[in-house]
Image (cartoon, rainbow, N blue to C red; front, top):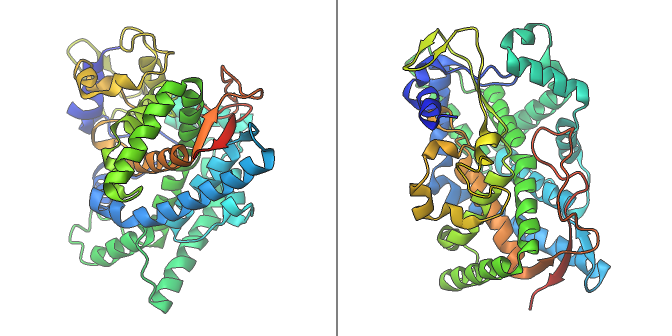
Length: 408
């Protein structure tokens, strides 16, 4: 694996590798660039700070729900955290991306939560189809992938349209992704580049919110779960994290946006989780023409695979890769590695624009839980987690079972 070649494909020669050859993808070429330029400002620090109160409200609901579950089990009781974290993530994304109250954490299984499980409960045939299209996009002509999401697509499109209509009719002002996209739609009416222009209508808005939902829901829940699992195996590291959370919160009068930004260890923990348990196994790029590099030629018909998971577990790049070590992500340690050996969010112009949001949501969830609860290994804890083979990204087959005790 050559990080410089990866950098060439993802960044330096991006114009020759713009396509991703995926069955569910954004626009390509200039039209993609037009859409990307509109969406990028949605995830700036300023916009995230405005949306932050929506996330903290749901974080408090998560803490209350876990407190209840832990009390039911009694002192030293064990709680399965995967379902709880998925419900938390569902409520956050439902609130931020679609402007609705899901109440998943209250135990309800409303339509939004049901549809979310529909998306992530794909059978083995779906996995085979998805794999074949990733190998070569020509397979998409033989396999109508969008029909696999037909029911859920209609649901989310209808949901977005209803939300917009309600807000316009009732003059609702709410600091979330829907509001920001409605502002983009208004600005879009003055667009001058009609050739590469993508009308920012309800369909596009629903599509972007749906992609946001697909990319974030299980990945965020799993990442926080993996963090709690690792911290349960390492009580000393957990204590360091708790001390940082409380010190930063004390300086800023609570678990505020500014307090989270100061939590360097919490961020390093999440970055290490995304290395050891990367939700991305590979990145794919489809050349627009035959590419002639210094030492390699890539034919137009060849799909390029970048082995993200393999790099993140390569002992030549990350010493003792199966050991959980957040200190791999100190500034000094990062300077000693090529930046393109760490790609859980991709890199180059097509990197995940919601990276800041994802890290913020993970840090908020983890910090809030550590401040209120102590997590430790129990009889049901799988010390060596077994992954579910039916799921794309690393997902514990038996969930996250941990002992949960309220801190004093």
